[in-house]
Length: 144
Image (cartoon, rainbow, N blue to C red; front, side, top):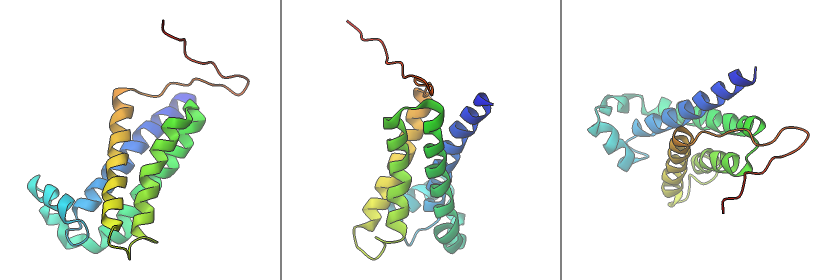
């Protein structure tokens, strides 16, 4: 069961991050910089579904990444990984709803997407391992 939860959190995090990135690439009016990157890699046809991407898919994928990273804490018990994993989707969701009326919200959106991708790459390069169980927490050995 623990292996299944670990697999779901690893795949779910990547799915949420990549889905949010592709959703942002489909919205040229809202995110021109990332949409031009999407057009450069051949995703320019996504602009016809801009409303679906910005109103539905981007919040769904950001919420998925937020929930999966929160559940990941129960698996590996490393608060710094969970906090960084939840920070990107939280900033992205805040930039889509309460902060959208401000001019700097696009910077917050790019920051949230960047954090989501960075944490996903970090998880691929250095996967989380469980350090604590319900009874005690084992600290890593100090290097001398």
